[in-house]
Amino acid sequence: MLPILLDKWHHSFGKLSPAIIVRAPGRVNIIGEHTDYNNGWVLPGAMSRSLYILISKSTSPNNHWIANELDEEFYSNDSSTLPAWAKYIAGAVSIYAPEIGPLQILIGGDLPIGAGMSSSSALTCGILLALQELTGGKETKEEIALLASRVEREVIGVQGGIMDQYAIMMSQPDHVMLLDCRSKEYRHIEANLEDCKWVLINTKVKHQLINTDYNQRALECTQAVKAIQSTFPEVESLRDVTIKQIAAVDLPENISQRARFVVEENERVLQMVKALEKKDATCAGRLLAESHEGLKTLYEVSCDELDHLADFANQQQDVHGARMMGGGFGGCVICLIKKTAIPDFEKSCAASYMNRFGLKPDFIHFELGQGAERIK
Image (cartoon, rainbow, N blue to C red):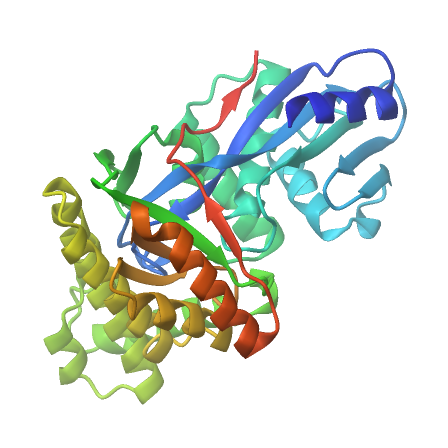
């Protein structure tokens, strides 16, 4: 991929090579959905599919930014004309290096956009890391991750947590990260299970989190905490709540459901850690299926396409379990499948999905990879 992008760079910007090249991976999340902005636990990892950011200071008075896979360019200093992807770049620049001046930037890679693999966070983290390298900054990877989270909250307006950014910046190969989103402490856990493989199925339904009910779910969780605090003042977030406490407070049904899902999902994260440490694929699969059911019925962030793929997978003998992954309303299903069964499963799953929706799903194979890095 990188040689293709370098050719594009020279075609667009001339013979001088980019000053900095950064690779920023996509994020997969084994379990722990919508728990990060509730100060809970999550279990993400970096995937082997990535965005590459090629960057130099420009001698031109204008920014010139190119999104290779979108075949779009931004050649201006007028922030009112920014396309959606360029808003993440502008946000990162405004927070990290507002005085840096015009930049030449090319972004591209093999990371699907709008599929729930956090391409937007990969872009934001990658740009921040590139700016750090370009300016000689000394921030830690944890500090870069927190800056990226600020960009998405304060500039873009998505009220998410820190999961995506921490996974993108600090992951290790073959491992996932048990991240405590309150304390920001984390540890890496081996996630390769014998004779099994993690596979993503892309519904081909694209989503922009800012245009969905994502922020509404965050607001509902805040409403749940405030209501529960009236009876249990020691509660600071849904991380502190129990099912008994939810039952003891008179909550609107939808608010009660949101709170119950978060409490149960936090417990599933901790159970999944034990399953991975014991190499127990059966238990891991059961937790995936339970997570999807909660996301579908309690948190209500699934959709027909996600439900069809998850339900189909969970009915197959050689699939340990499956669930929707990401913010919801489209994107991917993550499955834990026996390696020998993958070809037959993909064939039958694709036929079922085509018959129901007239769409061909993408099956995305990946390894759990290294966090963001500069390419020397």
